[in-house]
Image (cartoon, rainbow, N blue to C red; front, side, top):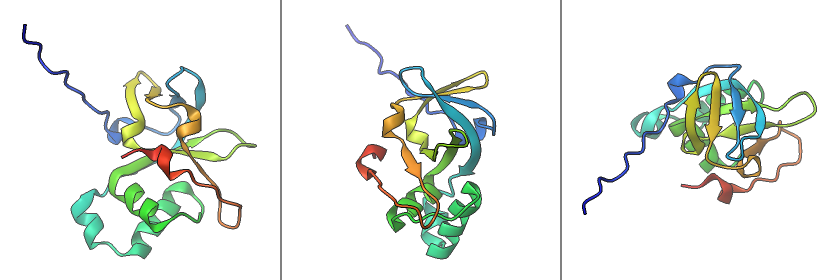
Length: 135
C-alpha cells in the first residue's frame, strides 16, 4: 500500500508579531516575542559585511551581545525571534527551524526551553551551546 509522504510546512517569521506567547514542546510557556528579525536569505548574506550582520542582530535585540561570527551569520541569514522571559531572566533566541506551529496568538516550538539559545548583553559571561541549535 502506497502512503503519500507527509508534507511539512514550516511557519514563516512573517506570521509572528511582538507580544505573541511562546510555548516549548512540553506546552510550557517560555515567554513572549519581543522582536523578530526576518532572514535576509543566502544571496544577501553573502553580499553583506560582517558589521552589517552584527548590527542587524544587535538592532533587533535592542542591545549588543558577543556571539561567534558563525552564529551572527546564521541569525542574519535565517532570521529569528527574540523571546522575553521577564525582568529577571535572559532573553532567548528561537530559530525558524525550532518553530512547530502558530495557532491564534501562540507559537509552539519543537524543542524544550533548555535547547534554546540564551542571549547575554556584551560584558556578561557567555556560555553558548551551539549544538542545541540543530542544522
